[in-house]
Image 1: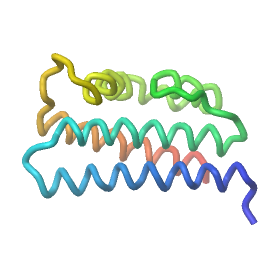
Image 2 (image 1 turned 180 degrees about the vertical axis):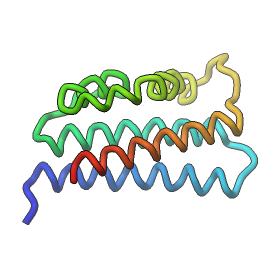
Image 3 (image 1 turned 120 degrees about the horizontal axis):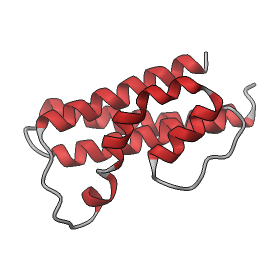
Image 4 (image 1 turned 60 degrees about the vertical axis):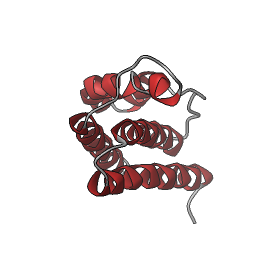
Length: 130
């Protein structure tokens, strides 16, 4: 039987995968809603990072800033540093996309890049835990 950290981390990963899969399906099926896809990718990355922290027996901060979470992951595995630029881009979407603002709508290219980033982080986290 898995320990409680692994079980809780698996729940985080399941939610993250659901967010990412919905973003991928939306990208395939719609020619709009790119901002929402980017927000889903931010949420997926946040959950993948928190799941990794939990799987390593630590408690993640209750925040949505994925750069802070990435730094926490780097304390465990320095190779997470390679995602800093991509996380910086995703991070700046969080608040403006959730609430009314003057942030311009995001493009198909933005959504594609966000999906690629979330998928790369998913793959990295999975590999780091094997």
